[in-house]
Length: 393
Image (cartoon, rainbow, N blue to C red; front, side, top):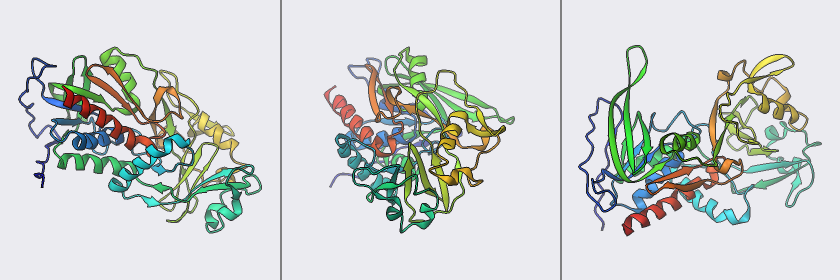
């Protein structure tokens, strides 16, 4: 029986002293390395990768660094839909989706929930919308079955909380020996170097650097979500084709039940949550560099919804009349509507999660819009590749 691993350390705040481990010389870094792997970013993708590395390379020295807390509340992980379905994936991606599902079931306590795609005409495998939603009258009341005449249902779909997935993945990795440093701003540099600035808050509520450490790793994985391409360019001087977009998740105060299905039409996903719905609007394209989200106007009244999202929802009001009622929370400013930047791998909203080497010691890992369904498998695949590389050095 293999020995029980020694749990890793967690440095949550600057009151917990941190001393870098004794460097271990190797052929790659003559001056020695502190860690085999440093993962920057404890969102969903970084946490999943950290766990996968503990399983693929159980003897590796591993450090996960996060600028905020766990789970990360500043990025997209907390606001992601948390919907697993193969309804909108090509068949060649189904094996990866099912591999991801296994990890989701292990880590996130998902809820079986049908996923219903609504159509304006008959489609392969579809039935009349009224029939598809006959058991869910509250859901049927959201749409006009004379416009959205047909529907296809994925009865095997799941919903889960991506934040729970990230939290449990990181905690499981720590129990397996990975170390975690929170409230620390990290930046990669050529040669496997990482500067780690431990942050604290002053009496005037300013975030300042308490101490800085320079760490060396055999391999650094940049998993900072939508900010990762910018970090690669700023700190490594490497330009990538990846992009980002700002997605808002407005609230729809229409009744839902624990068995209500997830609804999808024209890129818009309506996810039942807390007895109502959260809307996840379509992402059409990247936002240009320097773009600042601003609210739009509806009948001359300022709203918190960005203009592009507001136009999309107005265009869907005939098909989903509930959107034309006060049930849709519009807000008055951008701060009234939850939103986050989401990574677009290769600059495309429909591209699956990806990873790519930036230099000999650094890899970029991105989730994006399909991270709910394909992200865990992508992290697992990268971990296996990194473990094989470590074993060969």
